[in-house]
Length: 89
Image (tube, rainbow, N blue to C red; front, side, top):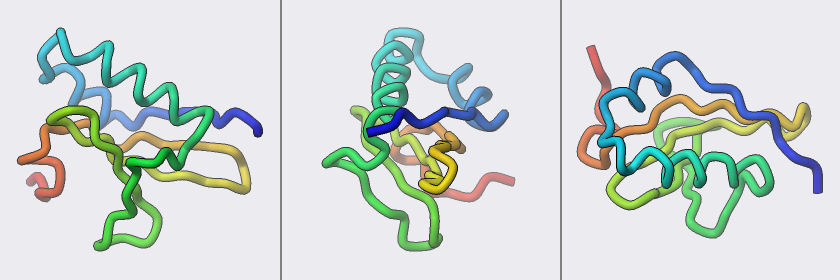
């Protein structure tokens, strides 16, 4: 199986700045594992969209999109579970 390239949106980079420093290595490891398998056993497709997925990493959610034609993965958000699905203004 090919490895997927991972692209971070600016919103995901900003989200990481607000997360407890102890949680970041665990989140990064989970995101890097998506490069090998973008559809792990705990992934879920978001109902409100046609192309977004999420994985759970403790109390945090990683929202991402997969382009299987180009072997490309885009990370949109990395947020706490209570904020992950809310629209920000």
